[in-house]
Image 1: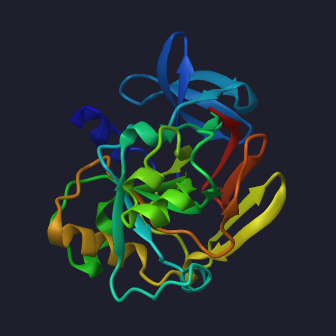
Image 2 (image 1 turned 135 degrees about the vertical axis):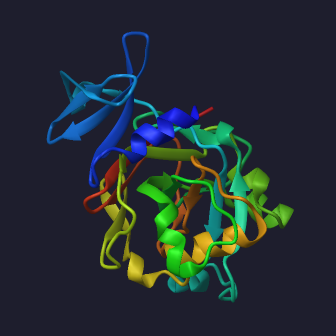
Amino acid sequence: MADDVWTNIRKLEEGTRLVRVSEGGGVRWGRVLGETAELLDENLNPTGEKREISALKFKTPIDPVKIWCIGLNYLEHAKESKMEVPDEPCVFMKPRTCLVAHGEPVKIPSWTGRVDYEGELAVVIGRGCKNVDESKALDYVLGYSCFNDVSARVLQKKDGQWIRAKGFDTFGPFGSVLLLTQELPKATTLTTRLNGAIVQKSHFGDMIFSVAEVISHLSRFATLEAGDVIATGTPSGVGPVKPGDSVEISIDGVSALKNPFIEE
């Protein structure tokens, strides 16, 4: 996205719940106001045009520049994965072609073997940074959303590295709302539901590495840019998903993200 878009977003009020939607053959920004969304103009000013949330066709909250991911960032998930607890953040990436928005289907190729959901907190970077101290890292956060790090487990174990298993087209649901704030309380809860049943529930105080620690770590070896997204890891309770299932990830006060799974 153009630099002026990031400038305009940063001018919006703290706590704004921002969305991008398909509207009139194009893509529009909007801000969530209860059960409705008010559309914004190209400079992100209110227009007075309102739409029912239930009638919106969502896009991802932003078009990311890069998608950074952190593995094994919850102690209980490391245990259930039978992997050692890392002494520094475990970093990998997903391609932008993995992205789908709230409501869009995740397509499972028939040959992949077991595929798992992974509910995660997504952090959106609002300003470029490099070599950031942990104490100042949150100054570069634009906001937060939900992410589903869909993973083909058989391929993940087979390959050793994770890019193929986690990089399939549609294996990165992201959205629906971007909450503009620099910090979330540690007690904020993430919940994942599979076909309506709770399968993951944890709070961000359970992270091994905090958001600030992750940003600082990444910035030591790579320049973070406005529009980078960081998926911060999943809590315990990951499990298989199959065509016909639906996965919903919700973060208290932030967002909800729901996607059907279908066979490709």
